[in-house]
Image (cartoon, rainbow, N blue to C red; front, side, top):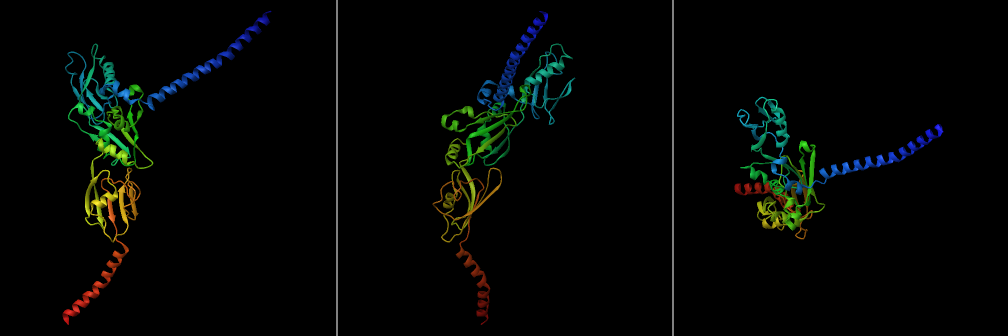
Length: 362
């Protein structure tokens, strides 16, 4: 009887384990997937519109060299309640605490640190921090813009700083190119330490601003934001027109036209102008002409050099009639007949000189 009872308990225990393990496994797996989805949602599918609307500018402002902080530690602590600059190495020099590294912290994070440190010297510290002077705003613009690079914005007051937007950065980078995909602009931003650090990003669609007046896509920028404009497979003059109407792109650019044209030199043309338009503005090509040489730089800074036959029928935006960028060079070469005449002139010039001298002496 005892043996039977023991075997029955063992059977029940084994059966329970067989049921329990799958249940635990399912629970752990579901929690893992939920966690993964949470991470994915907070970084890859980040909703910038809700984020920007729900936060004050200073809530996620990350401190760094150039900021000047106004500190209030406690009532009557006049030796502590002062302004302190963040030096070029990211430190502030505080009484009693000496050097403290603050680069990368938000105001709230720094307040928590100072409350924990000053409680060693002061009863019930109540640290409050405001920014007396903000550091210049620096952003990086890459991809399909006319002048990629690093851009720094100076401003007269904090309200100007808070109103620097994606449009402003694209303007500073010379506007978009004819290959820019305004539906796919990525902004990458540094995350605060209390939110796990790292980077968050948003995919923005500026065409929504132009077509639907959805200004949530034109977000305000933060220091060290990285902006990347993706490339279209084919040029879009329509998007260039939208950019010009929005003032992202300048309305006029300068190009150089030389060679077999009636009025060579630097020409100011519309931002939507093509190579053929610039040749027309230069008075048109001469009757005797050779191939056209077109020299430009693409968005990555690489030299784009093309040589082709001129035709008024070349389609706007095509290889032989590209949309121009500021600084482009167009050279209309000589025809074979021009070259032959030039060679003949150089060959006969000495003979004509000798003949003229002979006639003088004769």
